[in-house]
Image (cartoon, rainbow over all chains, first blue to last red; front, side):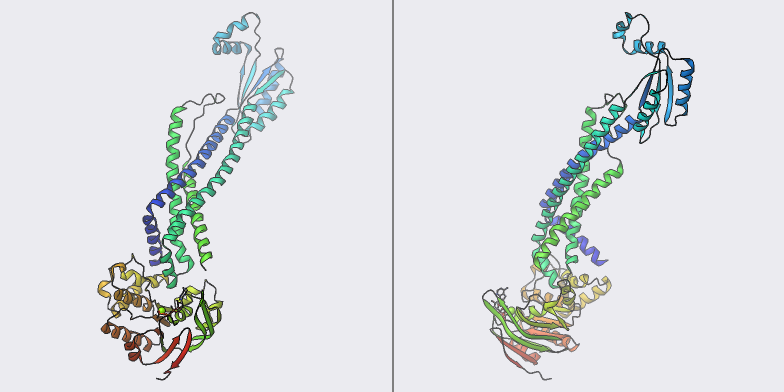
Length: 299
Length: 222
Ligand SMILES: Nc1ncnc2c1ncn2[C@@H]1O[C@H](COP(=O)(O)OP(=O)(O)OP(=O)(O)O)[C@@H](O)[C@H]1O
Ligand SMILES: [Mg+2]
């Protein structure tokens, strides 16, 4: 108990004595973790957006003008049976034309010369949100294509696949940047702690003389590193939050992303905690590196 | 308790101890004298595991210091007290905190610690300065705090290097009496000194060193 108090007090004293180094250590750690955080934030948001894109995957089945009523109800029955489908609506040729006029009033003249309504009737199918929604889409599309009376099947698959690919690139990017920056902050903290250690060489010698073990001597420095790392992590969270707010104010509307209603979000609380924990662990690792390295040289 | 066999210790260029063989029994009080540079401090440091011999064997409490793993040395030291010639007190801690430290390292409960620290501070007459920062103490005061720190955990072996070097005759008398009392309780004491008064007052076994050699070893009586 007394021992624990002593070790904690020593760690705090160390941070206080080397105040300039402490502050530099915290700030540099904060920036390294924040740069990693930027990637993480980007990744997190791309993932969420991909998710919501997948939620809204639509398959449009264009029907042959000459489709028989029998084929049409057979198709509708097939759609009803499909479990991955959330809903489907029928859009007749007339409704399609109306929609077209409504959505593109400027281009309405394009259809005027043709006389007959060129737009096909269609079923608009919404896929139920699921992790493998995009694979359901492609199986559905190939199945439906073979049915008689179906002219063409269109879906947003391309887009989804491209975003998914992008997010996996981002994953690799975040990972490699993360590794590099982790090494950087371990080095930074390791240096900060080494300075603290050297400044108190005399004290450590005395502690050894009165029978302190290496662990007893090292613990305050490990705590110091952990505190540095955690504070750095906390500060980086603040930096990220600030940066995030600025970015969000500038791109309020994300509807251009495939016409999807998506908004960018900050990390959920668990991820924020993880970031601070990451700082703490990096800090501990950094000081362990310098403390044990130093001790090995000494004895 | 303490045995040295043909121990030799060099420092760059100079020989601090050469071919020293020595045996100290449990409960003995041994004075080590000799001119400056004779190797007294070196001898004590070797026994404490603060230096390692170039040659020869050192057994302390039946453990071979040279073969001890570095992780075992702290535990050996916890059974010993060392009054260092240059005190080595922690400068930005109080007298009390300095003396308490060996007990904290051993994980002693704070109640026991309080009693022991007060006891040993009283024994060296430093109880009234317990809250003073050690960096502002006089040399004699620092020396006494160092003695209190060495005896606070009732060591099995007490090594004292010139423990009265900065004390006036009166304090020297009292501190010497303290060492005698500690020895009377069964602690093995090895005390390096130039001081006639201490030698006469203890009047026991005396080892004379010169240039790292054992000159005489007399008075194994009493
Ligand atoms: N760390 C060291 N590096 C080099 N030489 C050393 C070292 N420590 C001691 N010596 C040398 O070893 C010899 C013995 O030193 P030691 O300190 O044991 O003497 P001493 O008997 O304690 O002297 P004093 O009475 O002045 O304290 C001296 O010649 C000293 O210069
Ligand atoms: Mg000496």
